[in-house]
Image (tube, rainbow, N blue to C red; front, side, top):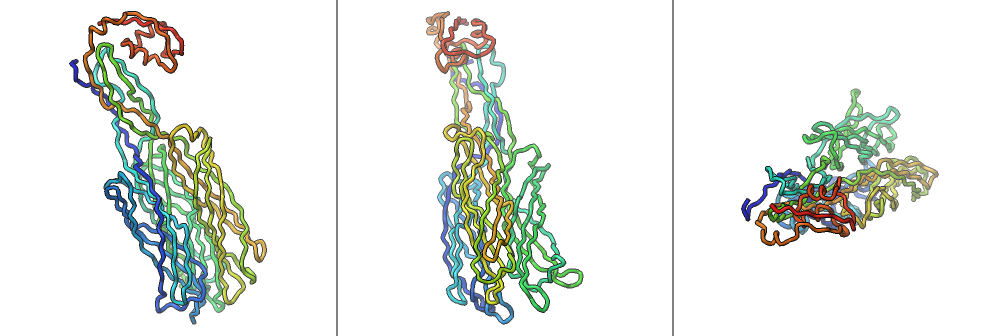
Length: 529
């Protein structure tokens, strides 16, 4: 083997996610909305809700262009001759450019939109003022392929020594964002009158669980439906309806296998609830359509045997290494805790019925600590109820409940290993009970799903250059020496420094394994070839 040549390495390719950066931006929207001419005047706003829908995400060099809209709906008390209530909906479009260094055209950006604040006020009976603060969290991800050195090609003989090490790592098998459409038909309970008009409804997914099957991801949970409507008949009274609809759907994922590790995020993109006629021609049926956004990542846990170092007793080997980041699963955990809160109803009239209580969990801070993650945030709740008040029979009350919870993560040391994590917060259960005419007790079960990775910086051998050694210099060195092991030294380091094989060094000193301790005495006998 001549000087200037290279030893060829055996390599094993592994696909991973390279996170190239994160960014957070806030958008303030402030716009007026004019009521359509055919709609009656607004006397008072009763209820409102909003949702951010991303319409386009375009990645360019060091820049992410976002385009979306704030969709809002309003339920209001009107002065119309044909009814007390009116409902309107609209949207405010927005565009935002976010600087992200290193972004490229083929990178994937995950955008998590959240409405921090939504305020819809009445300017006059024909105009609304819409104000909102929206937070967009961006995560820039790129699938990468690393060619990891696992050994040397061919027969290198006894002169070349190699050191290998086992590394646990996650191999990326699939990553995609998809949608799943869920449709079902519901019937009104027999003790409820038919539907004259749906005034208001809300849809909330709860307790969504994902399970991997061959070639697909099954989603199971519940879709809570809250509806306020005008009943048929002479009285045309307000009616409330709450239904827990079993939600079962799936998305195709050809890489999926039950043995894989997965991280699945599910978000309600849109939902519609419409009245329909039954077999008797009465509107006692409900047609429910929901579109879910499913963002999934699939991994396989691997144990890799990687080449760490190489040397030769008759040549100089120069190993060039590059830093490669591999992730190892630390823990995946679902944590649940309960919150209880009493809400005060701002009404002197008798409360006839609670129509709905919807909530939204916002995580504000996550702090790693010894053996745990400390998570703090707020639960925003909105209660809609019917009161014995002819002028304003529908009323609402808002409540914000702070929380601080610990998620157990055995082995987590924030001052030790480099970690990264993903966390999702949601509501599993939310129930209300009327205590008296002014107090309602709300009970919530919050779920925190977390997956934590340890980021491992591996020195991957990129190439091994071979060069001749100075034979005269070798022959001037003593052929046998006594050596005392220093702190932190391994048998490999000693053998490499003195150009002897590991087998020779172990045989010469009667060692049965490679373990040595500080101040151990070794005899090193060199063999000049």
